[in-house]
Image (cartoon, rainbow, N blue to C red; front, side):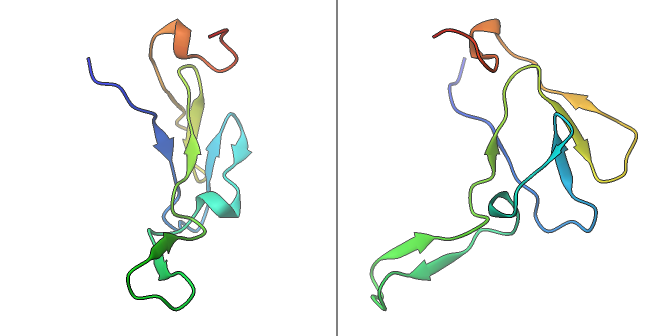
Length: 84
């Protein structure tokens, strides 16, 4: 199986994205954006909205005003708060 950390981000929706009934913070919203670091053309850095938030197995995800709730599934050892 592949490894990795799942992230969720809102690409600028009008009604927001929620994880466990908490709206994603502004830092987790927006499109990928890169800016020059200190006016250098060779170094670029990610800015606000570029990553999203980490989601864990058992997290409930809701998009906008939808009544549908999606639950992320995965191994128990990766659940939020699991001893590791």
